[in-house]
Image (cartoon, rainbow, N blue to C red):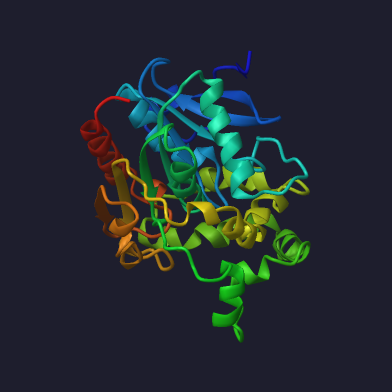
Length: 317
């Protein structure tokens, strides 16, 4: 059987988590030659929703949405992306074609054909490519923070090197293999300090979003030797992805889509969604106030409300 596993709380813990979250289950799915760890909720025969997390997150990042969508009757699945957490970390090229093949294979393993896909941060990059590469399979797209951006005239890292020639940003610094792993793995307390730094800004705006027990889930995932390399490899394939998706450049996403933006995201701002209708004509927008980058964790109720409202209007698939 391609889908197998056990029922458990899926690593969701802590008194601050609503009781219904503990109905989330976990299992491993075999797809594209690897095993992906998945959290799931809801009935086995509901409309299928796939949730894709970002960097440096996990399926756990969707804990509130898993519970809410499952309770609403959807079959909802959030994998640890290939190379993350409890999913396999093969020594391969982590380009968008290979990653999305793995993720569509997760849907196949559940015996489903069409699905709605939601993605935050890096997951948000993947969903727009997935919708264009698999148009017969994707019934709807939910972008969380990450808009569908126009194709740049040159490969993106090459462009960033031109724009930030004197002050290279982290995406540029990630390109040389081994350097980022050494810095993030050895600076101070290594991955523990990295996790606290990454999520720290959210605690000033929404102080309840990342209590110590939540941060511990991420620390546990990134402490093992080599755990940081596959997630960083996603960034090292940005230029490769630009070449691989050349045939998709003029293809529009023709299904109904929802774009959820966070008013206070310092990088993926709501303004970046302007012009999306040229490529995503059937688009609904929601902006969540008092929210930074980690939208579905900082403002879970508002995120759930937006997603469930969109899904209710989408009809069946």
